[in-house]
Amino acid sequence: MKRLLLPLGLAVTASPAFAHLDPGAHGSLMAGFSHPLFGLDHVLAMVAVGLWAGLQGGRARWALPVSFVAVMALGFGLSLLGVPLPFVESMILASVIVLGLLVAVAARVDMRVGAGLVGLLAVFHGHAHGTELGQAGALNYGLGFMAATIVLHVVGIALVLVAEKATPMMGDRGRRIVRTLGGVFTVVGAGLALG
Image 1 (cartoon, rainbow, N blue to C red):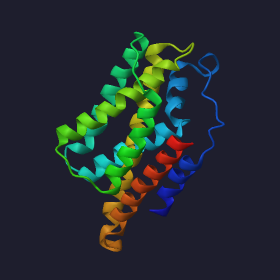
Image 2 (image 1 turned 120 degrees about the horizontal axis):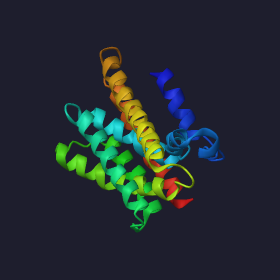
Image 3 (image 1 turned 30 degrees about the vertical axis):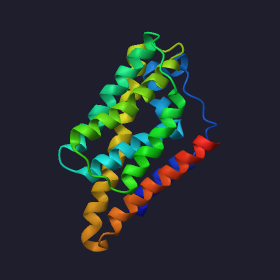
Image 4 (image 1 turned 45 degrees about the vertical axis):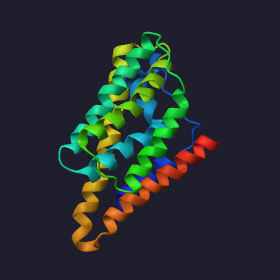
């Protein structure tokens, strides 16, 4: 478990000094892939979706991430069409706090309600990606950030699966570690919102 927490810890403490990749030098796909990875708020929210989906279990393990990615693509499309959304940055930070809390308390909700909630939050992430398209080609950029989002969801789900596998040896400590991560995400999200 400690080996899996190290990369996540590095991601949480990464400096925002990294710039997004230039689509001219690296291609639109890589520019899109890098975009969520260089934003701590995006990383935390997307890993939290995976953590919460993993804690929910069953069909929610794929339904919550699929809902997030699908509605994020919708938000991206709205941005490309010039449709404004209010409070985009505030809602992205709120998504970190809300999703972190859901993980911290291991909230159990109907899968449709959970999918609707993550979808509501995802539209703002997608819109933000669209506003930072720059000179990138929309299709490849969109595919890139959706692929990165899926990777971050998988990281969250994998952490839960590892915690579940460790449960026979560690007792309930594996799930408590996952829930503690949710609390950390909430605190970091609140710090970003207040900063």
